[in-house]
Image 1 (cartoon, rainbow, N blue to C red):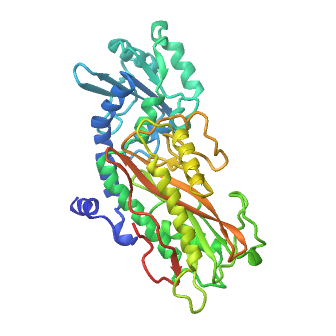
Image 2 (cartoon, helix red, strand yellow):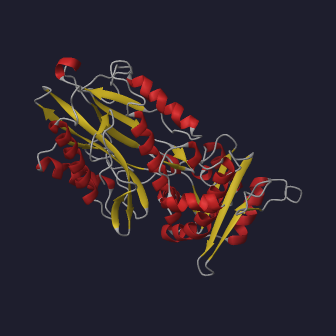
Image 3 (cartoon, one colour):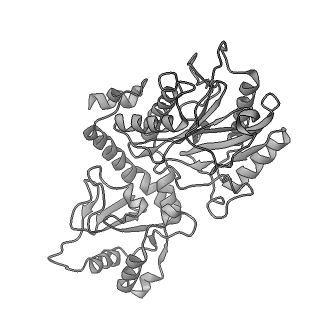
Length: 445
């Protein structure tokens, strides 16, 4: 426990195996955070959403995405059909946490079904509902948020058949509550998040170094698989397959600005290349998503060319414009359109595709553009910005380089936190290009 506390308080300095908690230690941290979220955060979210009963229904290997985030650390899946019921009595300031299942759902949610007394699981659920007579029965179905749409058709049909008609009229979508649960971070989670981002930065820094890359020999695919192996070596996971790509002069690349789905793989890395990666990890039930840039020095060079450093500053400026437009209560589409217009007014050519980050990599909350939807995103783009939430500040700006006789994209992505005191990056952002061979640290903020 002492090592866990030191880890949480002081963070990581190296992405070494000795810095990663053991599975047992991870389970302790996960369960402690889950207890805090259920007992302290959930009542606030239920009150905010105006929901007094939340019913989550899931079956083994077909888990509701929300219920999956509530699983005790030693449960890797739901068991049989698992039904969780939360009942909030605002007047008594209490919250009941019941599992209509054959087992206790960890230490926090006690079993409320004795199969010997009531053989029918659905009938027992209805008994619990009738005893509490809720104003609303919230279920996880949602048109726009996939993570909040975890109630499968079969379970909905069976539940509806059992539920008396007076209560069927009280069924509502749990969307605001489910999204709130997924998007909201606690102070302790944010301490941990800093460590996740630092690990991510450190892996990228090692990948984009002479320790991994030998110009003229190493390919972009070699670096991608090195990153995958590094994550496995550390006992971590990645929630998506990383990418590494290069941009170079028009003569060396036919001057083409590739679409995101068309970028070539397995290119040999050469001196003078601008490298880009997209990489993220999963750890302690949180996720990172990071894009950084590196320059491969030519013989005799001690620094990247000034025009590339200036291009990076243009990317940083787009980041600033976007985050300066963050405002609680503003929709993702509003933030997107304001930011794009401001960037264009400043002579930039921005594209913004920022997404919520946290319990999932592409998480629930306001979507602020997609790379192929720069006019706004229907549905989740209309969702508004809330405090205590994390985003992958993902975007690019197109820059014309006369020196290369072509346009390039400065593609950046970094975890950012929106709280009561405004915006901050979770653990810094890239303001200097990484250099290969390495010369200095890349994090300027």
